[in-house]
Image: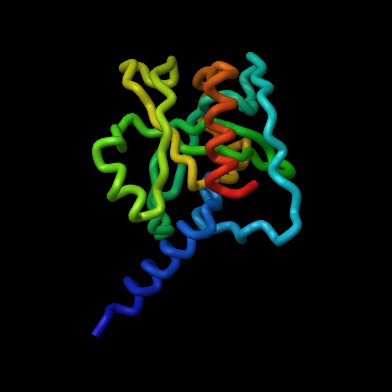
Length: 166
């Protein structure tokens, strides 16, 4: 007989992958999918060297794991826009997902390369996850990283828009 708690987590995880929207910060609950007919997120490249997180910047924030069980980790994210007071972001990873792209896609995880930047002190190349949109409270952003250049930002946003349908 299946473990009910584990089954519930599996269902929540699958639903979260289908929705592609995750509540970031210290609240790991999933956000609802945008209602039909809602406008696309406010996405515009506008980094400012002012210590506050802005679209186009890679910053650090606590990101819940896909399982939605309250666990997560502090990681770099690319801020791509705003929704109300919240920041919209896509998580970065220094792992090479090209090696296991078929398995990642089978689980609904889609990545694109963005290269290296000052957000990684070891200079490792990074990838951005396109299928999972995070909504972060600006107060939960840990520290400012660096601005991504306009060309890479525009490419990532275009790919995320295509994948997520906004």
